[in-house]
Length: 195
Picture 1 (cartoon, rainbow, N blue to C red):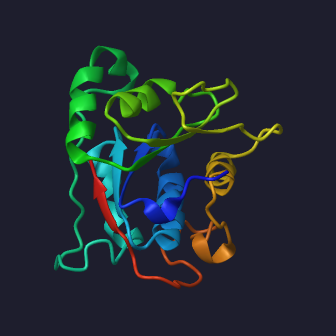
Picture 2 (cartoon, rainbow, N blue to C red):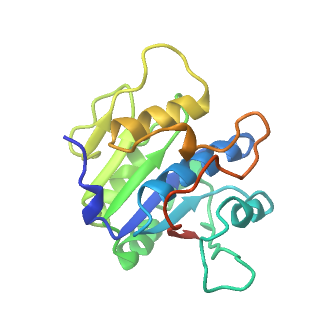
């Protein structure tokens, strides 16, 4: 059974993606934003600030009350590679934000478990991630990756679709040009914040 996304008000998207996969993060946020326009989405990522300014163009209605469309960007003061040494501050940040759900976005060779465990300790009840290894209770909704190798975008779309998101061409950017313009927009945008 999929998580009940209609009950979620505050969603955390944790991106362990690398800088060369920033367009994948854009696409994931687009799918989530169009599927769940009523919720506030926050993104936890260690991508450098210089990579993130294109988000307002990708998500033009993210902050309709702000004139410049700028996103709130708060980067962790440590790389995710050293999360084991900095878990407690991250847990406190997540706990203070009172998230209802978290989606942990990883590449095939990455594990979602350390970040998902921080989410668990922060009291986030719905924790979605993708891994070959069974999650026990760390991920409340565990997605087994595709058997065949796929590109990073297909890997993430498999995660979202398995977790109950409708994946269609209208949810995606033009993959050939990395354009931020979707084929169609059927719902207003959600709030998007970068932590």
